[in-house]
Image (cartoon, rainbow, N blue to C red; front, side, top):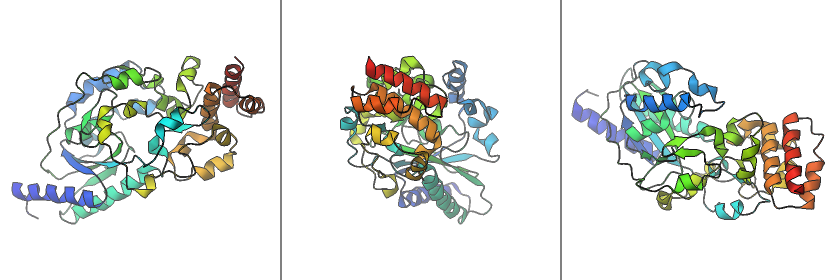
Length: 352
């Protein structure tokens, strides 16, 4: 392949077509200048909004300077893939306090491997056209500012809840990247269409969106149930309701998600009856059952102890029920101090 502008223009079109044939809903191309995002990232860290996610403070400037993370990188190929499963009965689960709500991205198989595998196929196809092309693929797997890169690549805009929104597809999608040394033509960013809407800010159960485009992760239910390994702050527990792994409220109320389409990816469809599970059933799982039923799932990463911690909080928030109260009391001698602490709190809630 020669290196004329017209050749690269056609090559970019081919890459997008290949990506869509691999199951990605959209492919865009960005340069590596993220200077416009540096200040807000440092401000977010300075305010401590990252909580205990210390990995966000590591790697120096590599997170927002792609060419420092992978030397030679001049472009980032950004992709998105829809994940919302069909028939997930979201409102009915959130309204039933005896069931557990799991963020819809985690109902199927872990997306990291699926996206990386397909990105590798795409990258190798690109390499077959160009000699000595350097590349690395990522799917939430390295110090990469995924949403700014996707925004630059024209895949959508970063909404007030800090998720990426696409005008035709909403926000129920995963992102992935290929860092490449090929000077491909870049795509234009799209306009922000949030306007005066504050639905996501208003709905957040814990008021974690402290202002437009400002997320205090320390208050976010996704952080509390997935990233945090210690005790959940007492004042936030009653606000979590029955959300035991992640939270989708800000996406549920976003007007742009009326355009979201259910995914055809079978790997993202629910497994092990986790669409509308009974809390007491989940709380009764042994560690072996937890490992078995979360095999290949993003849920497994939190571990059995935090899984029980989260469910204990949800049981405390559930409608008062003698069976729930007795089950909690049966776990007062649980070997985990973390679990015992949340069980005690839940008993007090059930008895109040």
